[in-house]
Length: 257
Image (cartoon, rainbow, N blue to C red; front, side, top):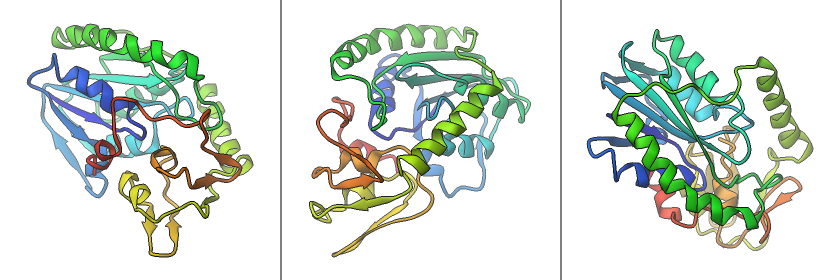
């Protein structure tokens, strides 16, 4: 059993730590480690995906990885996708990607966890309950995975949601300015942002920080910066908008690469 995961601010890593308690034979593989692989072949009987929704859909890094993943057509494939409010069409988009390979998503499990969006962050008062409910939810998911139980995919397959997601992405990039990344004078050039970036999009120099053009939209750099010194256009992290999973540290994010 191989489980592929992606995490920017730690929620997916917290989930896999719970899954490890029950899925003893599973191997947990960071998607970011396969960034430069042209093809990934997996002949496992059971394959899982663990990742967040971005713009009510599958993150690009997960989408790109799935396109180069070769699996058995009769494999039991499941996904654990977490989100702040709605899964959108993430489960159905993943199923479409698998269908291109003659496979299918046999089961989809949604978990509500705090959203790391700087513009639309989950209120602080709601976060403790979300974190508290997650372990029991994962325990129940594990039981169904071990039984290879098919589960109806949550969310919607509406193409309109895909359009809304693209509009949301456009608004964040062009209006809020997430494409316009920069560091403030608080930057100490510690290099943490470079090391947590899953797509190697950041280079830290002695007197400068360079941001490339292949951002994964995970906000890892801005949330894990110890000085809160990274700005995305008009967006900045403060006590109300900062989020990292309380059970995860920056080193866990770095270990994905």
